Amino acid sequence: MPASPPRVTAAYLQPLLETAAARGVTPAALAAAAGLASGALDPPPDTLAALDYIALLDAGSRLARDPHFGLHVGERVRPGTYSVYGLVLLACRDIGQALEQTQRYERLAHDLGRSRLEPLGTLARYTWTSHFPGASRHLAESVFAGIRTFGSWLAGRPLAPHALAFAHARPREADPAEYARVLGMVPDFGAPAHTVDFDAALLALPLPAADTGMYPLLQQHAERLLRERERAAGDIVAQVHAAIVPRLATEPVRLAGIAAALDLSPRTLQRKLADAGATFQHVLDAARYALAMDYLRQDGLSLVDIAFLLGFQEQSAFTHAFREWSGMNPGAWRERTSARS
Image (cartoon, rainbow, N blue to C red; front, side, top):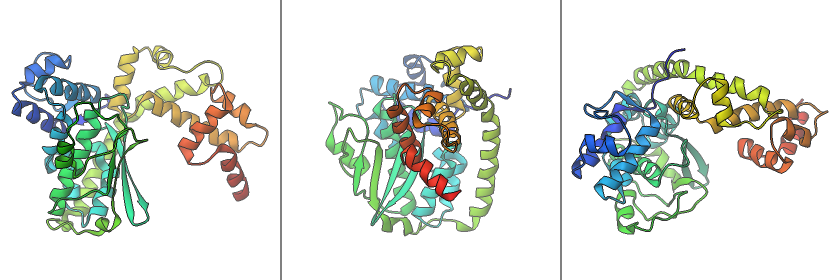
């Protein structure tokens, strides 16, 4: 099986190393504190597993005694941080196109999470969903600081948010002034998701330094790299999916059990999935969602039956999960699909 590439590139790692170095933390000390092998960061690796990157964020905050380490990592973002995808953004005509391409190509720089852009009337909302919800706040805060830093650089002026919210709790050591300085405002905490709302008119804001003539060539290159990574990453996800499906209706599906079925340790399976841009929960949800849509097209299966076949203890749990996947209740989805048949 071809090896899946780690999901944080050397370029994306660089701002973290620079932030630590500026606070007197050497690569050797940083690696040791994060549980990495001696010399793992000196010289910096070409690629790094996402879980190791997250460990480095936490280690950097501890060693530097910097409660806003994530914000300061994001401040050091520059075009090269995002590798080829960063070059694509440099060729976009406006902020809207840049955010659209972010949704498409950010996995070329990292696979820590995914972006989504949606209209809200006169506002637009950017949501970043972490693939590692158990990670510390430094991960999401570094991402949002990086987006504002790079976005403001592209626009040629500071971009002001209308509202900003993080899903994590308010840190006890938080300095509101530092959040305001880096992010443009003091965020709300404990929100349902990591989001920033801004004036929708900003989507049409031209990028003054854009080299739009290079866009087609850069996009072709990014698409080629994306296809290569998807081919390399697909095997472990497909194996996990194939192991999950026959077990859903017969036994509790857990990471440890699937790992054993694939002759892997749970930690190794988690790492391989992270390298492939997925988590066990994502693959499990995808398998359940695909089967749920198939079962809902079969009139002979009740919602209770379907919940059982998908491994849910109660119909209410299935209903809640399906609403998260599709945006509607399974009964409503079934009615809409039947009406279209």
